[in-house]
Each structure stands twice: as structure tokens, then as C-alpha cells.
Image (cartoon, rainbow, N blue to C red; front, top):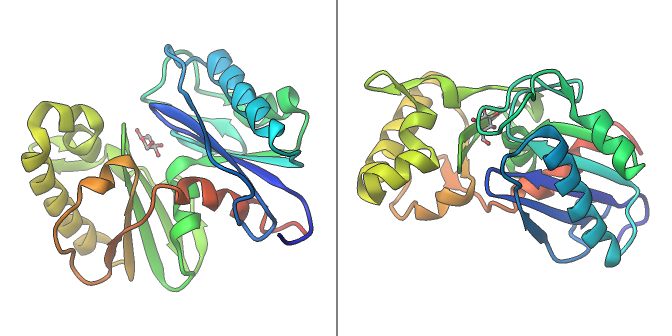
Length: 237
Ligand code: BGC
């Protein structure tokens, strides 16, 4: 373990809230903790659930600061959208709320951006697309984040968005075979639009990808959503 502050990295997902303490190099210090995302997922309920996960994590060791990946557009720690959550999220200062509740310095970022931080090599254009409850995307240029690319809400096919075609609801509705065909189409479309050096596919449903992917396209472990949390503090010592 390298010396320095311990970061509790928290991934707020559509189904679960997961947390893991990381050392300054981003190496896990304990097992991942998982609690179900409260429903309705209102700001107060989610902040309380984040505190509950942090309280469990604290039992296996103290932490000094907190990173949160959140499934919506985030600017300066404030939530601008949270389409898969309930209640009044727009304008909610999640960063301040978590910081106040846990009494630790806190940084909040879009969940796919955080996952991307876990996946990137830092060279050229790299894009992470997460396939879960929603469809997220994290775009990087030479390791620098272009925040809040919301590819999920852009058109993919038949007037429907990536999220409408590839999100959890779509998978449940059309089944794996048709969903996989759509993923193939999405990969082709993304490649033609962004020409990424690396296209990383993450999120819980990326595990369903069982065919040979084109060069430069790979499935990355969903754990990167948490491991990426260390990068939020790269500008500090
Ligand atoms: C949200 C994104 C998020 C993605 C994955 C989408 O519905 O708009 O901000 O990254 O879901 O959670």
C-alpha cells in the first residue's frame, strides 16, 4: 500500500450503490461493498444511501476523501440531469450534500466519465461506453476528459436513442439476441463518428458481449467504474 490519503470511491448505479477504498495509486484496499439503490431515488434517499455505504466501508478502515460517480450530467459537483432517477435532481449540489453528510472532501463526476478514467491509457481519443440501466459515455483526448458526453440520449436507430435501444429496459423487452445486434450497430456507428483509438465497453451488461470485437474495441471490467475514482484527485498530492 502506498502512503497518502485513502479515497472512498463510490459508484451510484441504477440498481446498486457500490463502494471501495483506494490507496493513492488507485489500488483497492478492501472488498467492494454493495447496497441497493433506494427507490424512489430522490436526492435525500440517495445521499442517505451513500452515507450508509460509507458507514459500512468505514468498518474496514478509515478514509480521507470521497469520489462519487453519478448517472447524470454533473457540473461543478451539481447534478444537471438524472433521467433514471426520481425527484428534483436538477441543480442539486450532490458534492456539497455528500461532503456535509460524510464530513470528508468530496468530488462528484458522471459515472461513465469515472469509468473511463479507470479504462484509459491516456493516448489519443479514447471512448468508454457503459451498458447498464442507462447508456453512458466518457470521452478522453490524451487522457484529458471531455466531460458529460451524453451519447446515450442521441439517435441510434428507428428514431430511438442509444439508451432506448440498449438500456436495461430495452434488453428486457427485446431479449439478448436482438440487443446484441443493436450493440454491433452501435459500435459501428460510434466508430464512424469518433474514430476512437480505443473504444471500451463497460457497465454491467457488457458481460453479455460474447463475439469477437473489431480491433481497438474491448470490454473492460465494470470495477473500473470504481477504480476510476482516484483520478478525480489527480491534481492534488
Ligand atoms: C445518463 C448518463 C449516465 C448513463 C449511465 C444516462 O441515462 O444520462 O449521464 O452516464 O445513463 O448511467
